[in-house]
Length: 328
Image 1 (cartoon, rainbow, N blue to C red):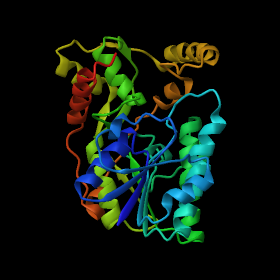
Image 2: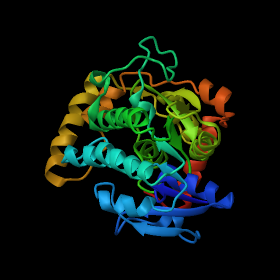
Image 3: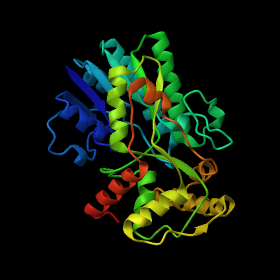
């Protein structure tokens, strides 16, 4: 039995990869030429080069595989050319699942995101059924993931593609090499670059628990269904407090109104348009932060047997990893 995994060198993908290897699976990893492969150094696996934007490479990658974990995605809150994100996240997902279906892959786990789900206006946790439309999606990342998930549902119905969808919330933990936007919050806090905060909330989950949820979805997930893989709903103030407590620091006490942060983010984006370096704050991230992005994983718990440790443990493991790797 052979498993293909995309994004094996990424944050969530490398956590799934380790579980598959520990489970004795034969794993083939599809990675882009020249990509950072530190996250699977020393691991015995088959590596094939390709690109989600190259349909021929996808057909070669899925050949002979029984299962597929499609985890790779372009996850950025700002980029100079948004079209590349849609080509990767939407077109690439569609082409890969078509190729896998034609190659008779038995089961596909597609990693979507809670970014595609609705948000309850009263701040209560959302679930897989909370209403949402494309117009509710803030920014190109959310829109691209929403559209990609719609393509997956079409393929399940039109081609009988054997896809189960998982929607991770906000993973934190070790091997966040980029780092992700949430990892950047952790890193900036422990490096004393977080003097203030805005009033928002996230669902924090340990990346290794998200990985376990992927394997549970492979084992027990129902084709066409989706499952939120989350942890603890925490305000940003609480997240920063936990990080600072771990490091013996005083947490920031200045809460900035969103309308104060917005022009700062706009200026940062204007600078980024010249330097082509991702800004620390974006207009889209400030718009998203106006909502409490809280979710419940009850469906995954009851249907898959999913469990998650306290979110603070993910924060602590992220801190330990950034410090051990001397990130600045």
